[in-house]
Image 1 (tube, rainbow, N blue to C red):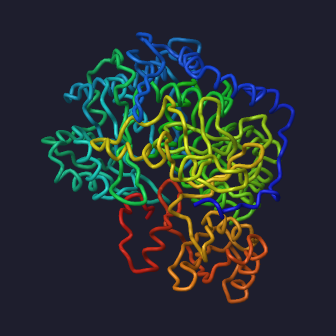
Image 2 (image 1 turned 180 degrees about the vertical axis):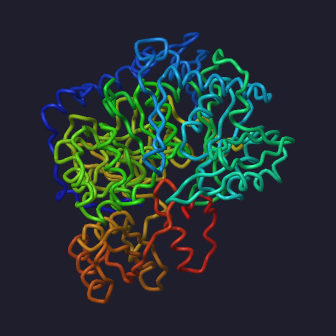
Image 3 (image 1 turned 120 degrees about the vertical axis):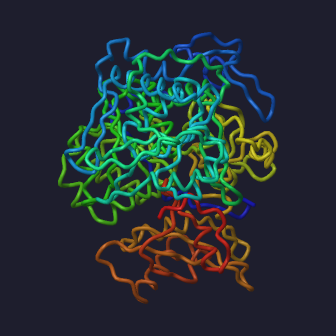
Length: 632
């Protein structure tokens, strides 16, 4: 597969971080730290885990029975004790844990660690009052409000397994996830705000539970005190009424390290959504370790991960990871381009955000509207920028680095998945950054780029990205479908196969090209969609692009591009010719799109990934398959 997929690497350049970044680097010398991990992997993770508090220590760090692993065997813990109690019972007691901003400036709430612990305990007691017990599943379908995080932590407090469903999903997707987990309780709100409009959630839940016999109660957060929605007492209960008369203390349920913490559904390219299961102990250690070291979190930081908690990034780096580290987190219900394209920059200036973790699709959207918006604001508080969700193309890297970071903030581009639970590849702070390359495996992770037999490919040659050893936060199984889990490890025996194409340079830096199913074979040449898209986006007129392969009798496939233009640029035949010529010069004639269609939007998941298979299905008149994660 990879033999004729050679990527031009010589044009990429390195950025050397400022001396201050190198001085604050947690590893000092990446190679030395990585070799120390390889010399004693169990000792490495044992040391990381001992920074947290456990009710009972482990008998051994890991037990590996391919393809299943157990981590911190027989240890007992509760993740909320580490997220809340150990801070609330220390000098961080009155430190701000959460700052929430709604769509308008007058909507703001602040919770200290002491207050957040009390809210979590009260709601956990309320859930217990409803009969929720350890091992029960609870579905959370809420807007981005503090109560959403309280609900997640309250479930973990009493040992219930939460499954968070993004508040933008419709009836069918919600019903599928409720039935898939046999959820006992659903927690929702009367509505969510988006672009100034109130979007009802309660009505969607009422429809979704009609054919979900496992649901016993629905908890409803009523946000409009002046016009509260009607509560049907035979099934429904008000969020605040549930906590009336309950205590503000709730002992954390001792959990085995391998007990499930949550189930999170993710769509593959084919088949029904997969319920990824993460376990209490390993997930806690993995998210704690990566948040602390990859973002260099300090006690004075104001940390903002823009991902909705309905996605894995929101779980790992919006809730659990930062709270495990005692960080002050900003969460918002805002939309980055509403009411103006300056919303994010305004919030960064107002709250003094120091760590900003967002998605390439958002960065390219900011590029599209120009530098004038961020340039109106003082962004000097920023010290670390992060990217997640899809490959960060070099042009977006440059814009993010120069326009937002002013050439002084390291960019932590990260590769990981719902299935991995934690970040796996990045360029650690202090190491030279190479635009277009996510970086190297972090200490604790063994990754490589291989051919279909599992043999490492030469530098500059594309192959499959694989993980060769287990890691603590790896998914344990797929809910009610362990056979589907095993396929991740069976594609290339002995390896976890991420289904992503990648290439590694002479220095070990890895560029993620795109999904292996996004490979286009043109006249016997393998072309990565992300590579062509990056070439198109590097043209000054292009904001975003997606490409697909179309069957062709002569070449096997031809390339069709869907292009969103920057504001002020007009489509036309002249521009099509310019783009074709630009791709020719950038990648060569084999990668030239045979068709270019100018569009206003692209089908994306809520996490920002372009769903190319939807474009291809529409183009060929085929069934697009599961589109439950498609953004409206």
